Image (cartoon, rainbow over all chains, first blue to last red; front, side, top):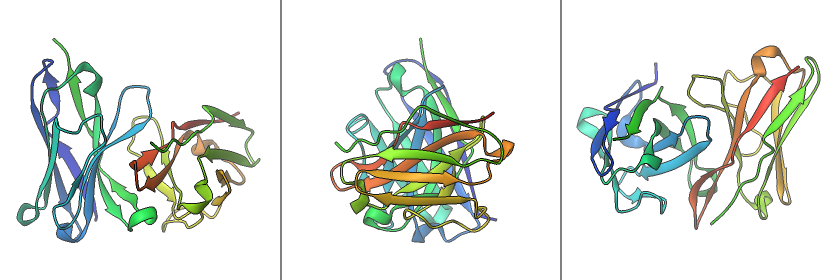
Length: 120
Length: 107
């Protein structure tokens, strides 16, 4: 069974750091792009970062310079290092598998999410 | 940046057809993907590449895309289809973009 399981969420003070992890199973992890997507309570989905099979990384302006996505294929694991956290980063963070290229790029498997709360 | 616009809500009676739109500049030139998210659950891909369905998704779910509007159509709506629906595209300047989401209410 293809599965993604996130961990590492929690309560952190503004300006603090947190590292999220995503454990993948049931597929050849190294062959897929991977993404992080977040959702604030009652709000929509927001793409946060992506990493390609070659380690190329992508970020929207809202997190560029503060968040770092990485992967460890030997451990079938995806990570998101989040620094300089703000209240606006409070959300459920989902790990998702990417398939397709360019315009055809979509997210076909999602984890259940881990909650990050930034508050003093 | 590329913007996708969805209506906040759509209501439909059971057995009827629901149509959820996703507007974007020349969206017809892009591939549109749709996700269903039920309360407390992770999103699920229900339509990809405008009109294809992943395995396990009922044929009642279909999609179309032309001009400035993509549409997710759910035929013979059931109570279990009540959920939030999001469209998504990839854009060369904005990377992965989601619409704001549409809450489907089954009356």
